[in-house]
Length: 269
Image (cartoon, rainbow, N blue to C red; front, side):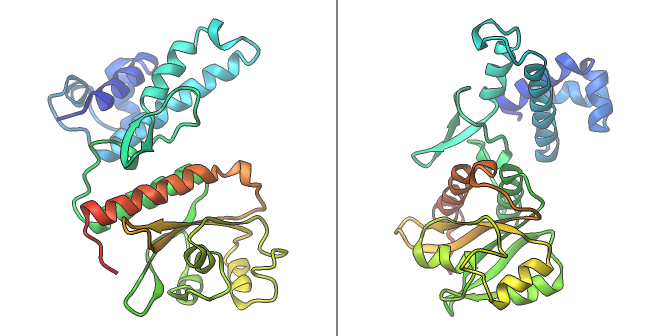
């Protein structure tokens, strides 16, 4: 059955999109179906929940922009902002908990306390979708160590064959962001592939540029024993600053994935 968060998200979306009838048009379904979801009679599909949360955030951001000079305590939207925050999640001590309105929100099914992937494929697909949403890009991949101690791509979005063929197997010592993140067990951010020493004069740098990648962020996935077992990487088509891509949230996501792999999916490289 729908969680309280899912039902509240639906109810909020109905408030400013013309009730069940108006929201049904945006979700391409019937008003009766929307009512069944919001009443808790039927489970909300993950894709629907994600769309509803996006609608809530789009509305609240638009409202806040209409009153940029009004103090938070006096804004008529402050209640809406607080409600949006309750639809957001953060990872704290291995569990997903609501974020406060003072923090940058991460809104995605992957961070929900009751997220329950059916298998590894769904886990990785959802994690990658969340990573792209957090990073604000459409290019990314997730790699895991195989038995030969090489990183292999297990999930990807937006890349074509030349990129995938080259990065299908990455050694720990290779000159690339993902290899360095795994090797040093810390996040690596490259603001400009063309000028960064990591890629300067390398074949991997050329492959990235040919794929339209100008910047990259790679976050190590650490298992319960403290070992790096994989990397979540997001890629950008333009030069970006660290402040623009929410690096803390990207590492938080990789940490969450590591917890899932060890505890719930029993991943073994």
